[in-house]
Image (tube, rainbow, N blue to C red; front, side):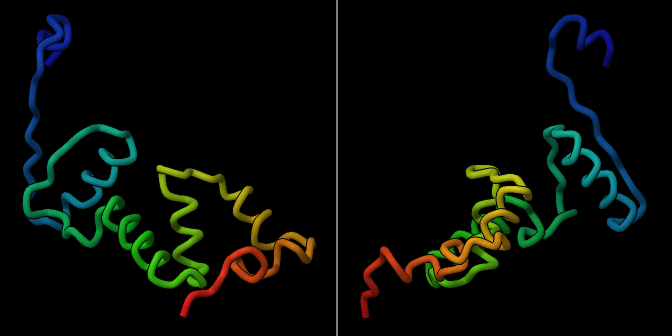
Length: 110
């Protein structure tokens, strides 16, 4: 591995485990460390962060008043608002911020 790094060559490492359950924390640690990896038959598609974000976007677009999914979209990597920003948006004392998202400026189509 060190020789490949020194020569700036690509290399691969395989991690084997006795059971899927033992490899789940390894996959999570690799994801947290932003290390690209491929988990063959380890993770279900519905548990992947990018799928969760895409589902939140779809649900938010289907129902513009779905607050939870809209907050998920705003927190997703493509928008990336901080938790502090989201907290300011949803819990400030300003009455104007408490108004439903489309109550003032959006025309409701039937």
